[in-house]
Image (spheres, rainbow, N blue to C red):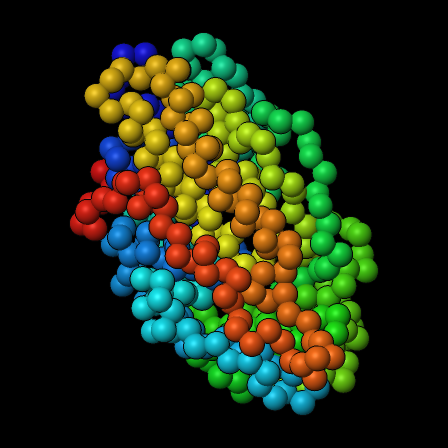
Length: 399
């Protein structure tokens, strides 16, 4: 190798993969993103974008794009499942922006994905490429795709999700850790509820959360119930399952359940933190590295942090020096050393239920913890760029 900067291949063009493309391009590192789908689009529902991630996207010049479609919730409220009274109210909005230095957004996954895609050089994205083989040939990695094409790279980053092909090529399978719960998710529009806050109805063994997206025009709904089906992670759920779980709850919950139609079901599970994310010139990012339960709402935010860290470590290790396998391996080892302790803590804290792990107790007469969300303040305050000493000018843009 005689180049001064590595050629990076990213497998997966989801939120984490696109964020990696942006972060690498900001350092002037050539990147190719390989996506198995034939079309660059994201499906799904809403997601949370914590201040730890929104501050990064603002620095990337994406503040206007986020404000155009995302919602900055003004509050988080927990309500009683029987009579609907407010049990706890946590101001968010400007209060959180002042506290953490950046806003908390709720946004449709597709809107965030599209905003990221607009900042990736189009020539960097290759569609219809499903990885089926990976070989380390000493001075280069060779990727083979199921359409018969191949690609060569100095570095491979697996950003291909919880069922990562790259992870499977590097590590033996690891069993999922089940939570005992399942989530039913969907979107509703015509329900008479506030569109400026996150609402959580808390019951003895279930809870229902809704939060605004699309400028408040729609609500994402997440109903967490005991898992009575040990089947696949994602499947279509029947409406009677939801109706039974929330029978006798407040009329607002009944209206949401009626409006949901046929929601999707996700068995909620994660995996134990890995001791390593890769080997040599191969590493992982996002859910491929650290799948986590959704209770802190940090899956996408942690992937964005990963993208910043891996790009910085590669740029710093190879700056002004010829690319070599040893330098790349050292850069990826530093990336993992920085990120793995942090993401492992987020994973394990999320297992405990996070900010939404609320249960009524006899001592509070059906109430919940009085200060919602404080258990995750350390995540929101974390600034990966300051951690790396890598804060770049806000005006910097992809090559």
